[in-house]
Length: 74
Image (cartoon, rainbow, N blue to C red):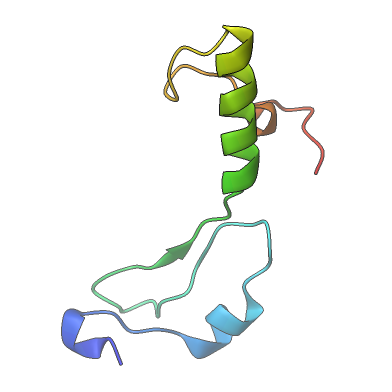
């Protein structure tokens, strides 16, 4: 396992991790916390390319992605 690196996985939390939601999958007493963070690299790549081709892309820190808006629906 990963215990020698200070990571104590909680198998139940890992099993119950819900797709599309952030969660912690380590035990409460784990010195190092591991988070599951949902991503959609394909969507980011597609929106970056479309904005570059459209001439509206600045950089990833200032670009407004569709999924960052409050009305975003998957």
